[in-house]
Length: 237
Image (tube, one colour):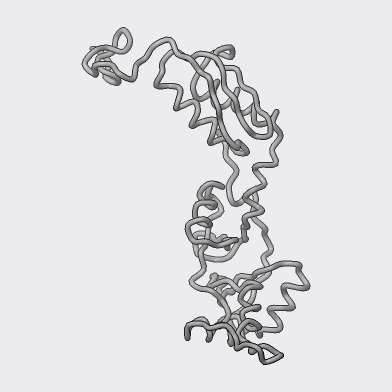
């Protein structure tokens, strides 16, 4: 089974800022390039942090109300220093949360969710910036056609990985939702089939009505599961 990686969906040729890039120049980078954030990098292109539109808007949030009705937002000393910063180095959130080009889409999505970030600078083995990946980029896998998903499940999952007969399991896919019907030899195979189908890029969910010929989930481990085997794994010599 082949899965798309961060390298497949990331943006290369990343717009960046330096720690000494002025506030207004950062705003100009956003406007000219139609982007909402930039990595801040050092002289060796190692990401130090990220500056987003929210970081720039914080500068406005701390200003007193023009009509004098309210004071600016109350922030911690650290957050106030960032809000009042004049360069990218002071504005940025740090350290940078990064990804590697060979990560799977799932790995990148988990890091984004855990760290509560919207994008990840992508770095090579030396820590140098080679791209950037956003949540929108990761969602590209859900643009795959149903027929393409079904073909991968039939060939890669059921055929090449599980060696099931082509007629054993019927597969239908609608809007990324996979439905499996049919019958497998052993009950323990059902969750494996379901898990492998769920891991296919672009699958939203998996439902099944699979039956089985043998319930091998509640057998004495000392008894042979199939002729020529002792226990579930060790062959008889």
